[in-house]
Image 1 (tube, rainbow, N blue to C red):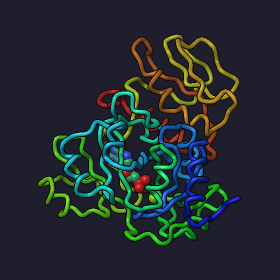
Image 2: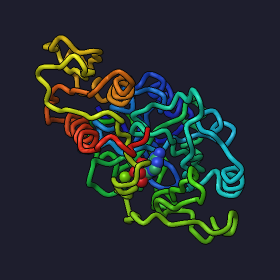
Image 3: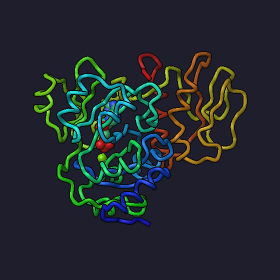
Length: 326
Ligand code: AMP
Ligand code: MG
């Protein structure tokens, strides 16, 4: 059952224990309440998507204490340094390339080679990150389609019993989401407007670009046409496979796996959708390699996390292979 607990040293310690154990915790940040899980644990991140009931995987922000910690997970640069000095801790998320060997979950970045990272200023968020000793992946703590929660009661209403512990740190002060700024290209690009204004950012690093695909609000994402926005394998993808060819790599699901593929990975031999979500991006990458002509994917049920898994697989199948980056 769900517990809403006033944030104290004791409840924060309990929340940290849950996070280290792979469970979820809702916690306040200065922007909105986040639904947090261990950003390095694929299963914990799958549980976030499951609890939100979102029919697609969007990349999540990893929350850290400061830029020193961020450097363990991303390739840091001078622009990031200037921005972090001015805005961190605070409502500015930076998108940077994954560092070599970055332990951030592939599901947390929706398979991308970039990581969105931010250091929140809310003392409860900071205490939780410190106590857990982990980067925390956290989207807003609401069911998909519901508005972002700025009080612990909103989280309890929206997520009900889906989250074991909600830390109550009072109302959020900023109340809008963090600004998301992409630093992976030649010109820093605003992907989502938010708590840190464009003017304030430009005062620090000069002119920035604004993404064409910029819608406002929760679902702001780069458009599907932009190659950075979706991981897609370079090889063609065939869905609904019940038999397999010798030139194919098979992404299997469940117990009845057709034989004869060049290489097979099973998303979940027991047919568990959360396990399948946790394995999805890693296994797609393992199959997307020279010698394999095509990736065949067994049918995945269209229920629960299966909706997001199938959404991602359909996008992968719709791509023509070329120009689709890792
Ligand atoms: P939320 O978790 O609801 O605050 O939303 C996270 C925002 O960050 C969404 O707009 C994502 O599309 C964006 N985002 C997260 N990771 C990345 C990434 N690696 N590249 C581009 N945008 C990202
Ligand atoms: Mg949201």
